[in-house]
Image (cartoon, rainbow, N blue to C red; front, side, top):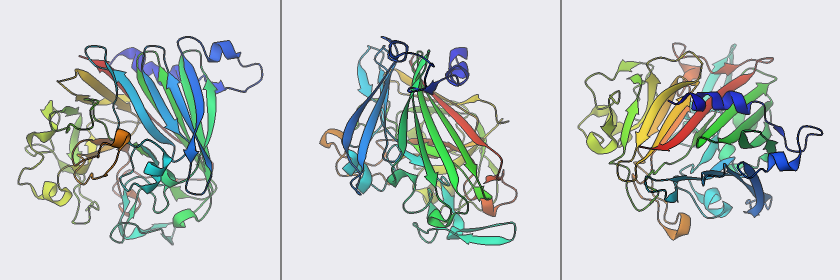
Length: 384
């Protein structure tokens, strides 16, 4: 991991609202190298106008984020020959994101991943949240953060281009306690990194587990599958699941199993092995626990596409990642009319463990009033 990548989040912490008086001038904010542009991008199902923010670093690398769902619509990066392509699956307009059930590029909350039985107990009070998958709650219920409007604000950055997405998740939304003030901030840096910072505050104790749900295809061609991508993760354990993909409460070693990606391994090498856990997920759809995690920003993952030469490093403050090999992906029409087919994209969702409120042995995800929820994930794109 280049040190510049790890410092990106620190450097960009100095970003301020674009409109802040006396902070900087427009020439500094929209320099030749770093630029933030915004344009109207259709409407949400309720008629709200959607905006699309595009963050560029002047080298061709850019990221676009929509105010509908705080959705990462595109990540454009070069291959080994300098050819630019979009590396995430998705749709051409907000209607596609509104209709989809696969969480393409979505901002996820209030609780990413699953909560078993759609209930949990805090301080003796049991809360029942919206069930939207086999009696369980997935990615915050319905509607989740992916199907609501966010407020976007340009950020003025000396060394990065940024946008901050904010919303108030009201007390009782989908059954969750507490008014939760949430922000998801996106920054593009000079070294072709996307820094995503999450923050939240609450007035009642509540579970919080924020993430993003991009489907990566480093080939830049959604017609190609991801089975030849080489994945490396510094993760020595998983949290096994039951038939409904809810954690059993165990934390087991990956040693000698198809879940061991501590050495570079293609995604397709073992995805269809005769393994009980793989059969439950129809492939990989599991929470991988990092070998070492202390809340500081650390490189944990590398994904590499040998054909294009594109690679992505993921550094995060989170203790785990959900690796999903796109087993059930089936969207009839994606960008440019191309279908989004099974295993033509994969997800690496940095997170706390699924169903943590119901497993005291898992790291706590309960945010208390007066405390700040803070999480950072850095996606660094390069060629090798």
